[in-house]
Length: 268
Image (cartoon, rainbow, N blue to C red):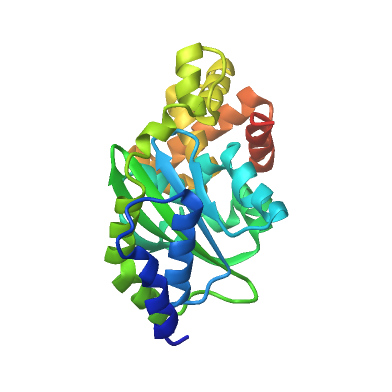
């Protein structure tokens, strides 16, 4: 796809003198700007802070698609998303999903049970640190029929990254204040309702999993192999496998499919 300069210049006009606007208006600015550069089927923008439930800033989904991509995602599966973990690690820049995903992500139960419902050929994201511990991620999605982003388009998006980042920092200042009323913050204050991450930790604790077992199971669900887990936790692959067997015995399960089912039931 060649750059549509007429559309690009038209998209920049609303930026002149703009100091504020709604999430929807800002999202539309990004959509028009980026669609002048490359082809994509969907744009979704989330704000992440720690393990808080991500804030949905903008998306182009129809109501049925939004249930899968946004509502279901916010209910708990975001905790297994490579984009969430990249944002939480504070990385910035433009990345393809496959650059960030664990070594067994595309064969994991999470991928088969949730991510495949999205029917995407590829997802790429701009990761922008806007301060106060908040990362805004603009995800460009292409469906299977559209195909993955060619190398030339990725190179063009990388050149646009400084502009995209500057716009996000300008238009979404003060986002950290909007997390103060989110589920995890409310849970800490009331002692009644926990965000998905807090609920999951409580369940693992109630099931008598040790801190090491919990760390291993979290990595298994994210799509890490035993070898990858061992490297991350500085333990042998054999030790990882022993811990996994012990966890399965404690939970009364025998497969990763059952493990994910137990995990997802937590958010229902």
